[in-house]
Image (cartoon, rainbow, N blue to C red; front, top):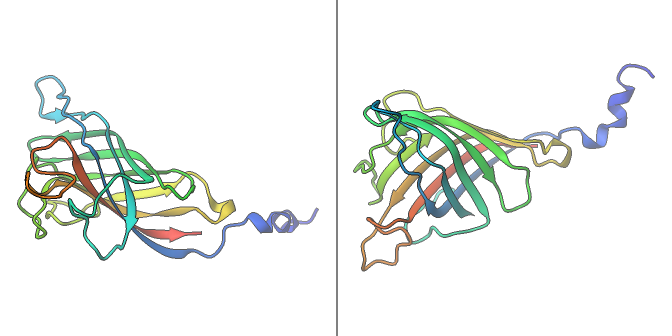
Length: 194
């Protein structure tokens, strides 16, 4: 068999030309609790789990338009310095459309537990990846990549950012009222699918 002819035999499963895809997920869920490492300033929070729906990427997530849905965002493992509010996170995204799961890895850039940096009236408790709602003190990093999918045209990779927040009081219709045990999340994915 000549060189290159094997590739032709697999031509139908070769990755296609990438197309730009931007997704915003607005969801609700539980935010992990601190687990401090001895007497240090380092926490290894328990897992955070959110589910949500893909929405117009130009519309910010709020306590009213965020709800449980078919996409899941799980921060499996993280570590953060609770004094500097910086750290790293690792987790899994599973879209409800049947695409392969995507792993994500990035920096935690804001771990205030309450920040007034948001212009939409959200109480931001956590920010990570490429989102810059709350100014990070160093360059934000957040990458994601699906585990396969090129053979079916569902390989999605790029950068991500998250904001975990609460909004509204007892008189509001918010699904993540300030002071409750439920948190809202905004996940921004910017990348290419092929």
